[in-house]
Length: 247
Image (cartoon, rainbow, N blue to C red; front, top):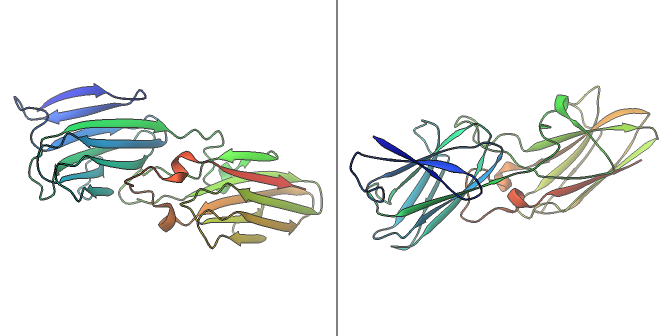
């Protein structure tokens, strides 16, 4: 097997694997990408010469894909977006719809998700809050066994008054969000909860407090977040929410 490394847009690199002496555009295309940080990749299947293109995405050597895309038209270019986690090896396979070889040209584009408050996916790693926070509600796929990791961000706030007001604005349009407040001493029983009914719905929450540290959790229903794969870039990949606290 001959492996040729191709550097692509935004500093990303992928490896194109082909059989010895074979035209890289012919045969089953296998492309590996190791994410350097949390983010997402866009994979384009371009210049399809015949048939309907199928793109499947796998984690490392897993047999089952985490995402699969098929274009409904023949000779049409295909595009798919997948959430990626730092250090994970992703395998992109391109064939015809029936699995036969396909002639095409690949393009992989990587974009990082910049979130200054990560890692804060658990109560014990909660980021200390200021008055206003802009952050992404985002999770890359790390293993096939856990295709939908927790879409949750935790924040810690030190309260000196008898009331805490929390507001979640700019919720991405593809997420149904949830806002919860806990005492830092017990992050299992919420003191207050507000859950969105519609995707993109803003949330408000007021809870009585005594002086001390409290935890705020922002989370999403991952059936609406759909971290496995998209034909168009999802809003939560590029659109940070705004979290406000007041006391």
